[in-house]
Length: 503
Ligand code: ATP
Image 1 (cartoon, rainbow, N blue to C red):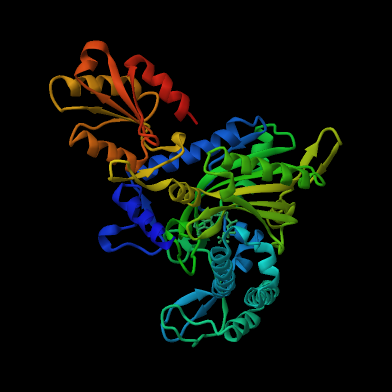
Image 2: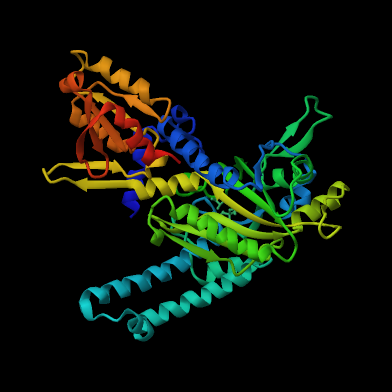
């Protein structure tokens, strides 16, 4: 699985999806740039989200707030005091780690041991294997399950607070070693604030420390009154936003999964107090359906309900996707109560309430948030789509089986030879399609090579123009996944393709 992931990362670079930031200077850790194909895929993801949230709901609107915000916003939200991760260093390797990650990896090791035992037995016993019974009776499995459960319980308790000494003690007791130096030479655990700060103001005396927003949510909360009043919004209603967020992550891991600069698509849904659980359940279902509608396999998603809740939440769940490195959070759904609006009321001194004309009273709405990372969504799409196929003729191909509406290029028009009027005809076809969906022309190289290149960037349709096209205005339409080809009249192309690629 790790090998596959490495291949996906290099495929992203080779085919213009994702480049390391400042590549000619050897990159910058945990920062990436999207290339010519990556930006199209990412834009399509954002459009797919925006349409389903904002355009299809009459009670949801969008905004685009600034990255810089008044510094008090982050005091009110709790980020200045509490947006921390527990940090630990290894004295030998001089590497920094998140103490919680080290312990979670250790829990994962027990799980791996269990999975190995189960797989071994399944192979040995074949069809007669009863996995549930094996898990209940095998001594090695039972021992590892016990260790895992005990560690999990200790860890969950230590993370409350969090208790930094207890976290360190777990690392010592479990004899967790540094993955690089292999030693157990750990420092104490300390808190590390994830917000980036900078200064505004030109003169030294007048400078003011401000933060780069670590989430887009607060831009929505501070605009609650503006939008509600100017849009004459009635509860329940939602405000959406897509934008950059910045976190000084201690350890950058897994490519665009955890970056220091990333993009979020968030919605805050404001409702009457007491109805928030109904809306929490509604958005859980709705958001999972949104993911599933892309056709990447319902079995690749699961909810992970939080047992331990943030101070502002009364319910929280993650939607996880099956990445090559396990089920991982792509989206969070949180019932945030009236915490944020109340805090901003307290810190700003402004009354932030909703006047309910039916109840003839004012109150602070409750809020349910859906927050998805564009980059993690991008990664899940890439991981799911990357396929290596052995073909019947003995050759192989790499094909990105992207959901068709998300593909960067929808249609490639390929003149069979680069002469005899074929490129001109191909260009004419491109011109008739390019206003409707992203259509490219490619004339160089053999047709086989051009098909492979389009497969590698996930183009769902290739249209080949040959000598017959000039006589009867038909072309060969090739389907990416099945590689089936059919002859179709040029005037039918738009309809066939549009039917399958529109978001
Ligand atoms: P994690 O536990 O993985 O750090 P989180 O629970 O802190 O994530 P939230 O604060 O709920 O994440 O943010 C909402 C979404 O933003 C996440 O589900 C994820 O998709 C995305 N996200 C958060 N941090 C990052 C990051 N460093 N890089 C890329 N995407 C991120």
